[in-house]
Image (tube, rainbow, N blue to C red; front, side, top):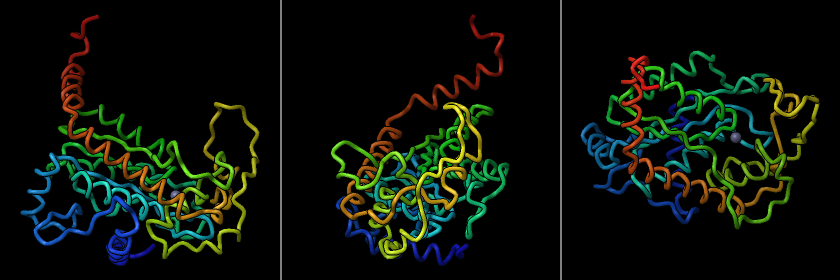
Length: 301
Ligand SMILES: [Zn+2]
């Protein structure tokens, strides 16, 4: 695992290097302009930033795991932060620092994977959300950058109904495909982890870390080693299909596809920030629900 300081430096450099490559990107905070990055704000500026963001904050959620033979371990973290930071610069929101404490047990057999325990994942996320809210982030958008989190994050959001909270958790799923997309060169059904699509986005977010020439060194083919009926789930399914922790063909990635998918993703996050700022109903309904939950026998039947 890289040290957090070198990772932070890498991310800062990435943001500087990459701003020119996406049409929607803006320059890093100029003097007098509030940064969208939590860790770059002074305490006084943080207070102003929360007000300007109307209490809306992003928690870009990455992971540390192998990404085929050609992409960096922090690929999802780097990409989700690139998309989130660009989106927050278009529609102001405060962006939480690097976060990668998610679900990745299925890659524990590969070097460099950091897989925290089940309980800690949920506790860390709850305490992070609590701390964000205590600092004024009453609307938290978790921006997911990792496919292995797609069950964890809705579960986390559902579990917010267990106890009263004075804030709302929203989950922004991966959203890179859209109509009008450039032609894909590989089979879209198996283009998943470190495949054409994801590698193309990495070529925009951190082109310096993409080793396209190494992509064919391992197979990302579906090995289909389990034969179970549709709708019957088991945790080893991913390893059964993709034991190299690589799904698809990264070698056919292109900047053209990357530009399109990155822009689509940024636009989706911008739209979510706007919708969340306008949303006054979720918190009101949550409060109504929490109140009623204290007296279920009084709920009209
Ligand atoms: Zn990934």
